Length: 324
Image: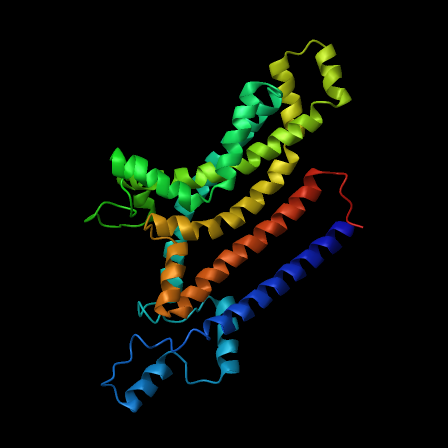
């Protein structure tokens, strides 16, 4: 019962937070000037301008536009893009899938590598290899991922010419859908550097968490008991210590998925990758706020949901957590 009450409170709190964010986004994007400035020609008559605004619902009072905006959040009818003159839903979801193709591999590689690296550093505590690993982890964790991206472009793109420096496919290639994209080597060739820049940044947190957690578990009495039974040091570390040290990393994984989308904005801009982050930036500059606001709201939804999942997972994985 206590868990159900906690879950209900967290769901209501998450929904309320999302409503507040959506309201702020609605009013904020309407302060950026005339959204149809790019489409209104000096030669257009007042009647034509009025008709154009009528098409996008801009002649309605603000509260009618706000109600239409909230209704669109639920029905997924996000209106028409001012710039593309197409359905906002289709544009945003296509770019969202593009971003997922970068984000998910980067998170999986980063967390698997970070966990294994954290186990190794915890095992080799006090040795030179631990100090070197800590310096490298802190270096990549404290370095902005866009700067790492620029460095990779300079070394592996401009100097060595091993990888393309921008885009999702080679010029002239046709985009035939995301399933077709997954079997094309050209896509992976273009995605290698963006994924690498995100992976190097994401790997730092699980590595540091895993090492710290390993050092806490390694001094517990049950570890000495397992050693006394004759288990090898490798078996003690990977089978028993690492298993009990996974809790902080497991919950951090859910949070990382949410915040990774925020980091995509800079990485996709640096690599000119057609993802949702770059789409949002370009839409802000174009005054295309139907696309900009729904791109931002998708990112906000991912962050809120992943935080909720992390809280629930922590309580499920750790029986010491009380919901009273």
